Length: 467
Image (cartoon, rainbow, N blue to C red; front, side):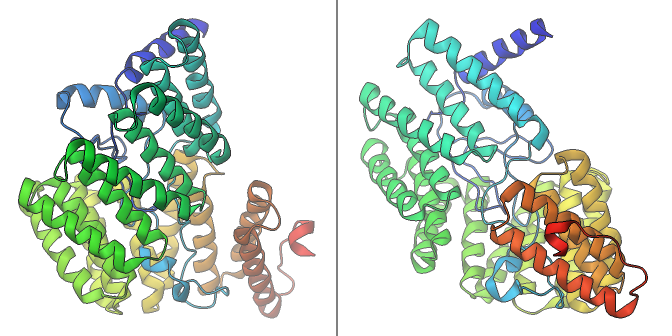
C-alpha cells in the first residue's frame, strides 16, 4: 500500500507540474448545470474540464488532466441534475403538493464519491508538503500544488479551508511572479469561483472584474484567457442576479468568439449555451429557445446526434420549453435525449442518468407522476452507487423520489424516503440549515397525508423529525 501511494503521489507530482492550479483563467461551469471551457476537453464519466490558453499540445493537456479527473472529476453539465427552471422561486414551493421536485443547490458540485474525498485531500496535502520541503514555498510548482489542494478543498465542501489557502497562494504568486502572470490570474479566478460557491458574491464579482481588467492589459481583449475571464464574470453577474449585465457581457463575448473562432467552434457554442441560460433566467424564453435551437443544430451538424454534447443540448432546449410552459414539447425532447443516450452511451452512462432525471422532472407537470417513479428510482440507484449516499446529488435524487411517491399516493414509501433525507440533511448540514428545514416540512406533510389515508401502516420516525 505504501508503495502504491508513493507511486500515485509521484504521478500526481508529474501531473501538477503543468496542471490547472494556475496556468491562466479556466472557463468555469455555470452553477450545477454546465461545465465549459476554451481549448481542450476530457470526457470521463462526462466531467469536462477545459483549459484556456494555447500553450501545450492537446494530447499533453489530456494526459495531464486525466490524472486529476480520475481522482476528482469536475462538475456536470447543463441540466445535469435538474433543469434550471426548477431552481426559480416560483418553481420551488415549500409543499410537495405541486409537480415540482426538489431544486438543485446553486453551487458547483464535485462528482467525486463523498467517502473518498478525505483520501484525495490527504494525497494533495502530502504532495504540497513534499514540494515545500524540496523546492521551497514560493517555487512555481509548489504554488501550483497549493492551488490543487485548495481546489480539492473546494470540491470537498471545505470552503473555509479552500478560501484561506487560495488567498495565501494568490498573494504569494502575485508577489513572486507579478499580478499579470498567467498563474496569478488563474489562481485569482479560482479564488473568485470559491467565493461564489461560498455565497460571497460581492467579493467574487470584484475579483472577477479585476481579473478581466488584468487579462485585457496583459494579453489583449481577444486573447482566449481574456475571453475566459469575461465568461466567468458574466456567470458571476448571473448568480448575483445582475441579469442585464450578465446578458450584455455574454452577448459581447459570444460575438467575439464567433468572429475569432467561428460560429460552430466548441467555445462559441458553450458561451452561447450560457447566454441562453441567462435569457431563460430573465424570462426571455423565446430568445433562449431560438438560441438553443441554433446550438442543437450546430452540435448535430458538427458532432452527430448521438454525441453527449448533442444530447445535453436537447436537455437545455427542454428546459426552455418547460420555462415557457410548452410541456408537451419538453417531454418529447426529454424522451429523444434519453433514447438517444441509452442507444449511444448505455443505460448507466452519466449523460443517460441526467436524461432520466430531466424526463422524470417534467412528467409530473403533465400529470404523469407514475411514469417518473421508475426513472427517479433509477437515478437514485445510480447515484448511490457512483457518488455515495451522502453526496448532495444523491440526497436530491432521494428527495425527488419521495416527491413522486407522494404524488402517486404511495405515502408510506414517501414518508420513509423523506425521513431519511431529513435525517441525512440534519446530520450533514445541521438542524437549522434551510435544506434540513425544508426536508422536515416535506416529511411532516407526507406523514399527515399517510395518517389520513392509512393510519395503521405508518413507519416509525426518528425523534428529531417526528417531534
